[in-house]
Amino acid sequence: MCHVLVTLALALDEGAGTPFNFHAKHIEPYPYYESNGILDHDFYAALARDFPPVPDAVRTGRNALGNKSIRRTDSAYAHLLAHSAAWRALDRFVYSPRMIDLCMRLFGDALRSNPKCRVDPSKARFVDRNETLSTRDPRTGAYTGGGIRTGPYYHRRRLRTGDPNELYVVMDFFHGPGADVARAQRAGRKAYTFGRHLDWPFRVASLLIYFTDTDESTGGHLQVYNGSRVHRSIAIKQNSGISHLSPDARAWHGVPTYTGQGYRRLVQIQLSSSWSVCRDSNADIYVN
Ligand SMILES: *[C@@H]1O[C@H](CO)[C@@H](O)[C@H](O)[C@H]1NC(C)=O
Ligand SMILES: *[C@@H]1O[C@H](CO)[C@@H](O)[C@H](O)[C@H]1NC(C)=O
Ligand SMILES: *[C@@H]1O[C@H](CO)[C@@H](O)[C@H](O)[C@H]1NC(C)=O
Image (cartoon, rainbow, N blue to C red; front, side, top):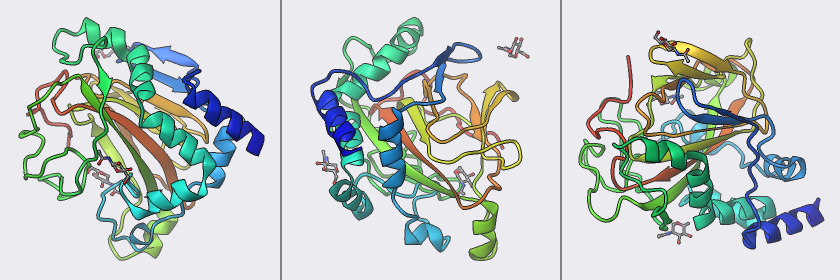
């Protein structure tokens, strides 16, 4: 196991490849990729073994980060990197120009073919930037991670300076409580769910890596929408991955309530720009 990890870390550092394997590309109803083994088996096993424990704030139902549980700038993340060679290897790949190159290979054609998209795949480049905590959804008050500036309508006042081709990466952890956890938490706490929505328009691409098994009986699967209709339900499994072009105006998706055991765990890796990329920044992202 150790040997495999060292070899993988070296291969990643030398730019020899990416840790991600995609097995299927879809173009309808919008561009997305899926994989039922996104990471090599041993690498995934090491990441899963070292996956950070549920933070206290999530356990007690007082998560100030909304659906997210751990971010790059949290002490829990520093602790994770200090103790896990596997997460260090993934971190080094994700927060580097190689992550941008990978996403441009996946979505460059889609970005080029939409004249509204402000990111030029041949000019896209990595910048290191951390988002602030004070970005909340004005309607729900929930932290969304949406932006590097504060303000109640941050998604409208998105920092429109600099080069839209400068892309930064955010990797966030999710521990979405299942029904049993929600019952055990404070009154009114709900199991994880996320209705039909789009990503913020300044996200360029999203990659989700799942660490929990779901099926029809547990909910928590991923729904790909064609407009307002469910086009496909994907029963996510451990080591499965989904990647989509976030600013695409058709990229509706959602998660029905997770009623399974424990927490629905995943990491979400998002490429972001300081501009809205292919959609109007005033456009709504939820449908109630
Ligand atoms: C999406 O929905 C539209 C309108 O109902 C339909 O015409 C189209 O064929 C659907 N696309 C796919 C890929 O199912
Ligand atoms: C972002 O946060 C990480 C973790 O604390 C740190 O290593 C990195 O240097 C920060 N980047 C910037 C641009 O502040
Ligand atoms: C996740 O975020 C969505 C949108 O803000 C919200 O509707 C939902 O209640 C959140 N779920 C949890 C478990 O916080």
